Picture 1 (cartoon, rainbow, N blue to C red):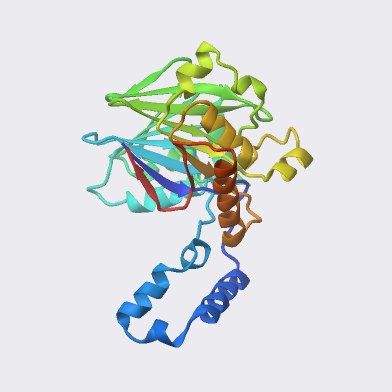
Picture 2 (cartoon, rainbow, N blue to C red; picture 1 turned 180 degrees about the vertical axis):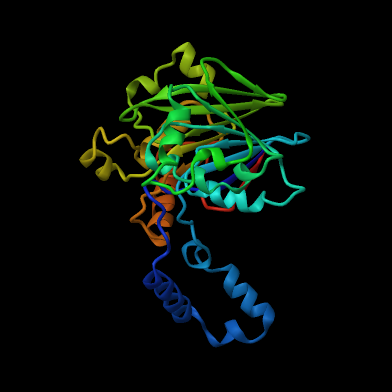
Length: 312
C-alpha cells in the first residue's frame, strides 16, 4: 500500500507567497559559512543540514490523498481538492492508470473544487467510481460544473462515471474501504483502507470529542492499532479553544487520540492556509515535544507534505 499526498491544506489553495520565498533565501544565506561552500561535498552537507521549513515546502493545494495497492491497476483517492489536479497531471498519459475510485469525506468547497480540473476525467478510456455516504454526490459535482461557476458541463467529461451512495464497506480489489462519521459542521466521514494486514485511516475535517476516545466496539474496530492515520490537526490548543465547534482539531488532541488507540504513525493534516512552512514545522516540533513530555512510546508523528509518500 502506497499513500501519496497531493493536497494537504484546508480551505482554498494557498500558494507560497513571494515574500516567503525571499525570507527562505535570506535565512539560508545567513547560515552559510566559508567552509560550507568549499567543495560540492560541503555544499551538499550544508543543504542536508538545513531545517525542513527552509529546504522544502509543505505545499499549498487543498485535500487529496491517494492509495495504490500493489498489483492493482486501480487508484483509491480521498477527496478532490485542488491536489486532484496534480494527481491527474501525473496520470494523464495513455499508459497511466485508467481506473480511479474517488471517496469524498464531505462536500465543502475545498474538498470538491479539483474535480473539474482532473485530466483523466476527460479521457474516454478512463473509468471513475465516485463514492459518498452522504446523498447527493452527483448533484453536487454537476452543480459546480454549471455557469457561472464553470464553463464546461460534466457531460463533456468523456470518462465513464459511476456514482455510489454507500452504506457499507466497499471492496476495491483485495482492499476493504470502510467509513465512519466524524464531528464537523454539516458532517464529514473518515475512511479506513484495510489490506494485507495493514490499515490506513484518512480522517480530515474532524473535531475530536470525548466520545471518540471511548472504548466502544465501533471505535475500536475502526481506529485501534491502525498503522497510519492522516488526521486533521489544523490548530494549536489555544486556537482550538477559540474556534470551538468550527470542526477542526488541535495537534495535542491528535497526539492523544493516536496514542489512545495504539496507532503507530500520526500524520498532521489539513494545514491552515495562513500558515507558512516555518509555522507548520514549528507545530510538528510542538507535537513531538508534547509526545516526549507525556512519555508516549511507539508513536511516530510527521507532517503531511505534498508529493511525499508512505509505504505500508
